[in-house]
Length: 220
Image (tube, rainbow, N blue to C red; front, side, top):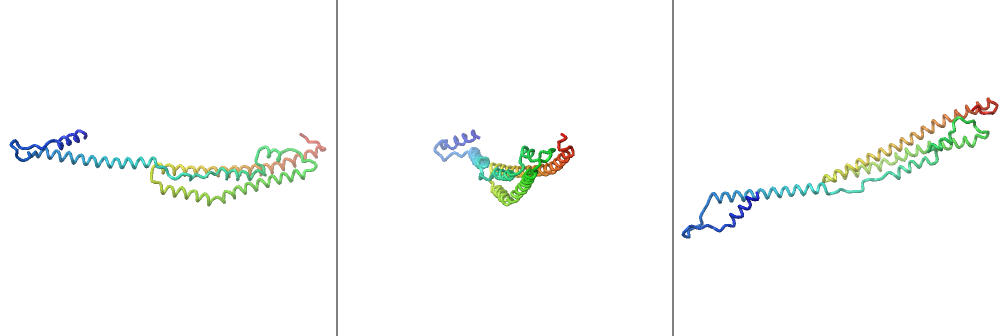
Protein backbone atom coordinates (compact mmCIF):
# COMPACT_ATOMS: atom_id res chain seq x y z
CA UNK A 1 0.00 0.00 0.00
CA UNK A 2 2.92 2.34 0.75
CA UNK A 3 4.41 1.53 -2.64
CA UNK A 4 1.16 2.51 -4.38
CA UNK A 5 1.08 5.78 -2.43
CA UNK A 6 4.66 6.64 -3.41
CA UNK A 7 3.96 5.79 -7.03
CA UNK A 8 0.97 8.08 -7.01
CA UNK A 9 3.07 10.90 -5.56
CA UNK A 10 5.67 10.46 -8.27
CA UNK A 11 3.04 10.48 -10.98
CA UNK A 12 1.28 13.56 -9.65
CA UNK A 13 4.53 15.46 -9.10
CA UNK A 14 5.95 14.74 -12.58
CA UNK A 15 6.23 17.62 -15.01
CA UNK A 16 3.59 17.76 -17.78
CA UNK A 17 4.76 16.12 -21.03
CA UNK A 18 4.26 18.17 -24.19
CA UNK A 19 4.61 17.16 -27.85
CA UNK A 20 8.04 17.18 -29.45
CA UNK A 21 7.33 20.39 -31.38
CA UNK A 22 5.46 22.28 -28.66
CA UNK A 23 2.07 20.77 -29.34
CA UNK A 24 -0.64 20.00 -26.82
CA UNK A 25 -0.15 17.85 -23.71
CA UNK A 26 0.59 14.26 -24.41
CA UNK A 27 -2.30 12.05 -23.30
CA UNK A 28 -1.56 8.64 -21.81
CA UNK A 29 -4.92 6.98 -21.04
CA UNK A 30 -3.46 3.84 -19.39
CA UNK A 31 -1.37 5.93 -17.02
CA UNK A 32 -4.27 8.22 -16.22
CA UNK A 33 -6.52 5.20 -15.52
CA UNK A 34 -3.91 3.66 -13.25
CA UNK A 35 -3.51 6.96 -11.43
CA UNK A 36 -7.24 7.26 -10.88
CA UNK A 37 -7.40 3.67 -9.65
CA UNK A 38 -4.54 4.30 -7.22
CA UNK A 39 -6.23 7.45 -5.91
CA UNK A 40 -9.50 5.54 -5.44
CA UNK A 41 -7.72 2.79 -3.52
CA UNK A 42 -5.96 5.34 -1.32
CA UNK A 43 -9.27 7.02 -0.51
CA UNK A 44 -10.81 3.66 0.37
CA UNK A 45 -7.82 2.75 2.53
CA UNK A 46 -8.06 6.08 4.33
CA UNK A 47 -11.77 5.51 5.00
CA UNK A 48 -11.02 2.03 6.39
CA UNK A 49 -8.30 3.45 8.63
CA UNK A 50 -10.73 6.03 9.97
CA UNK A 51 -13.25 3.31 10.74
CA UNK A 52 -10.56 1.23 12.47
CA UNK A 53 -9.48 4.25 14.50
CA UNK A 54 -13.06 4.89 15.59
CA UNK A 55 -13.59 1.23 16.53
CA UNK A 56 -10.31 1.09 18.45
CA UNK A 57 -11.15 4.30 20.29
CA UNK A 58 -14.55 2.88 21.25
CA UNK A 59 -12.94 -0.34 22.49
CA UNK A 60 -10.32 1.58 24.47
CA UNK A 61 -13.01 3.68 26.13
CA UNK A 62 -15.06 0.56 26.89
CA UNK A 63 -12.26 -1.14 28.80
CA UNK A 64 -10.89 1.96 30.57
CA UNK A 65 -13.96 4.04 31.50
CA UNK A 66 -15.02 3.14 35.03
CA UNK A 67 -18.58 3.31 36.30
CA UNK A 68 -20.03 4.82 39.43
CA UNK A 69 -18.30 3.72 42.62
CA UNK A 70 -19.62 3.45 46.14
CA UNK A 71 -22.50 1.03 45.57
CA UNK A 72 -21.04 -1.38 48.13
CA UNK A 73 -22.62 -0.94 51.55
CA UNK A 74 -20.92 -2.73 54.42
CA UNK A 75 -23.13 -4.75 56.76
CA UNK A 76 -20.39 -5.26 59.34
CA UNK A 77 -21.86 -2.82 61.87
CA UNK A 78 -25.33 -4.30 61.35
CA UNK A 79 -24.05 -7.82 61.97
CA UNK A 80 -22.23 -6.64 65.10
CA UNK A 81 -25.46 -5.11 66.40
CA UNK A 82 -27.34 -8.36 65.79
CA UNK A 83 -24.68 -10.37 67.58
CA UNK A 84 -24.70 -7.79 70.38
CA UNK A 85 -28.25 -8.82 71.24
CA UNK A 86 -26.79 -11.94 72.84
CA UNK A 87 -24.44 -10.07 75.20
CA UNK A 88 -26.90 -10.42 78.07
CA UNK A 89 -27.63 -14.06 77.36
CA UNK A 90 -25.77 -17.31 76.88
CA UNK A 91 -23.39 -16.37 74.08
CA UNK A 92 -20.29 -18.45 74.85
CA UNK A 93 -19.30 -21.93 75.86
CA UNK A 94 -17.91 -20.58 79.17
CA UNK A 95 -21.22 -18.98 80.16
CA UNK A 96 -23.09 -22.08 79.00
CA UNK A 97 -21.03 -24.34 81.28
CA UNK A 98 -21.46 -21.98 84.24
CA UNK A 99 -25.24 -21.71 83.81
CA UNK A 100 -25.79 -25.40 83.06
CA UNK A 101 -23.39 -27.42 85.23
CA UNK A 102 -25.29 -30.63 84.51
CA UNK A 103 -25.12 -33.42 87.07
CA UNK A 104 -24.77 -31.46 90.30
CA UNK A 105 -27.13 -31.44 93.29
CA UNK A 106 -29.00 -28.21 93.88
CA UNK A 107 -27.63 -26.11 96.75
CA UNK A 108 -29.73 -25.55 99.87
CA UNK A 109 -30.76 -22.12 98.62
CA UNK A 110 -31.37 -22.85 94.93
CA UNK A 111 -33.69 -19.91 94.28
CA UNK A 112 -31.03 -17.31 93.25
CA UNK A 113 -29.30 -19.85 91.03
CA UNK A 114 -32.56 -20.92 89.43
CA UNK A 115 -33.54 -17.29 88.86
CA UNK A 116 -30.20 -16.66 87.13
CA UNK A 117 -30.73 -19.65 84.85
CA UNK A 118 -34.18 -18.42 83.87
CA UNK A 119 -32.94 -14.87 83.36
CA UNK A 120 -30.04 -15.88 81.10
CA UNK A 121 -32.18 -18.34 79.15
CA UNK A 122 -34.94 -15.81 78.53
CA UNK A 123 -32.38 -13.19 77.52
CA UNK A 124 -31.00 -15.61 74.92
CA UNK A 125 -34.47 -16.29 73.51
CA UNK A 126 -35.12 -12.56 73.37
CA UNK A 127 -31.80 -11.95 71.59
CA UNK A 128 -32.62 -14.50 68.89
CA UNK A 129 -36.01 -12.88 68.35
CA UNK A 130 -34.44 -9.41 68.16
CA UNK A 131 -31.89 -10.64 65.62
CA UNK A 132 -34.65 -12.02 63.40
CA UNK A 133 -36.71 -8.86 63.75
CA UNK A 134 -33.66 -6.73 62.97
CA UNK A 135 -33.08 -8.56 59.71
CA UNK A 136 -36.77 -8.38 58.81
CA UNK A 137 -36.70 -4.61 59.32
CA UNK A 138 -33.82 -4.23 56.83
CA UNK A 139 -35.66 -5.62 53.81
CA UNK A 140 -36.52 -2.15 52.45
CA UNK A 141 -32.89 -1.05 52.75
CA UNK A 142 -31.73 -4.16 50.94
CA UNK A 143 -34.30 -3.54 48.18
CA UNK A 144 -32.99 0.00 47.69
CA UNK A 145 -29.44 -1.31 47.50
CA UNK A 146 -30.36 -3.88 44.87
CA UNK A 147 -32.26 -1.17 42.98
CA UNK A 148 -29.16 1.00 42.81
CA UNK A 149 -27.20 -1.91 41.35
CA UNK A 150 -29.90 -2.49 38.74
CA UNK A 151 -29.93 1.19 37.79
CA UNK A 152 -26.16 1.18 37.37
CA UNK A 153 -26.42 -1.97 35.29
CA UNK A 154 -28.89 -0.32 32.92
CA UNK A 155 -26.60 2.68 32.57
CA UNK A 156 -23.41 0.68 31.95
CA UNK A 157 -21.99 1.71 28.57
CA UNK A 158 -18.75 -0.23 28.47
CA UNK A 159 -17.08 -3.51 29.31
CA UNK A 160 -15.29 -2.22 32.42
CA UNK A 161 -18.52 -0.73 33.78
CA UNK A 162 -20.36 -4.01 33.20
CA UNK A 163 -17.63 -5.95 35.02
CA UNK A 164 -17.75 -3.52 37.94
CA UNK A 165 -21.54 -3.77 38.22
CA UNK A 166 -21.28 -7.56 38.16
CA UNK A 167 -18.77 -7.35 41.02
CA UNK A 168 -21.19 -5.17 42.99
CA UNK A 169 -23.95 -7.73 42.42
CA UNK A 170 -21.68 -10.56 43.60
CA UNK A 171 -20.82 -8.59 46.73
CA UNK A 172 -24.54 -8.11 47.43
CA UNK A 173 -25.01 -11.90 47.18
CA UNK A 174 -22.07 -12.43 49.55
CA UNK A 175 -23.68 -10.06 52.06
CA UNK A 176 -26.90 -12.07 51.94
CA UNK A 177 -24.87 -15.16 52.76
CA UNK A 178 -23.35 -13.32 55.72
CA UNK A 179 -26.82 -12.44 56.99
CA UNK A 180 -27.97 -16.04 56.57
CA UNK A 181 -24.94 -17.20 58.57
CA UNK A 182 -25.82 -14.76 61.33
CA UNK A 183 -29.34 -16.19 61.49
CA UNK A 184 -27.91 -19.68 61.60
CA UNK A 185 -25.61 -18.67 64.47
CA UNK A 186 -28.66 -17.30 66.30
CA UNK A 187 -30.56 -20.49 65.58
CA UNK A 188 -27.76 -22.74 66.87
CA UNK A 189 -27.37 -20.58 69.98
CA UNK A 190 -31.09 -20.78 70.66
CA UNK A 191 -31.23 -24.55 70.13
CA UNK A 192 -28.18 -25.12 72.33
CA UNK A 193 -29.65 -22.97 75.10
CA UNK A 194 -33.01 -24.73 74.96
CA UNK A 195 -31.47 -28.20 74.97
CA UNK A 196 -28.98 -27.24 77.68
CA UNK A 197 -31.68 -25.79 79.93
CA UNK A 198 -33.89 -28.87 79.62
CA UNK A 199 -31.08 -31.37 80.14
CA UNK A 200 -29.60 -29.35 82.99
CA UNK A 201 -32.93 -29.29 84.80
CA UNK A 202 -33.33 -33.05 84.54
CA UNK A 203 -29.73 -33.70 85.53
CA UNK A 204 -29.81 -31.45 88.60
CA UNK A 205 -33.12 -32.84 89.74
CA UNK A 206 -31.81 -36.40 89.41
CA UNK A 207 -28.54 -35.52 91.16
CA UNK A 208 -30.44 -33.86 94.03
CA UNK A 209 -32.71 -36.90 94.43
CA UNK A 210 -29.73 -39.25 94.36
CA UNK A 211 -27.99 -37.24 97.08
CA UNK A 212 -31.10 -37.18 99.25
CA UNK A 213 -31.49 -40.94 98.88
CA UNK A 214 -27.86 -41.36 99.92
CA UNK A 215 -28.35 -39.59 103.24
CA UNK A 216 -27.27 -36.22 101.89
CA UNK A 217 -24.04 -37.43 100.36
CA UNK A 218 -23.58 -37.25 96.62
CA UNK A 219 -23.08 -40.73 95.21
CA UNK A 220 -20.44 -39.44 92.83
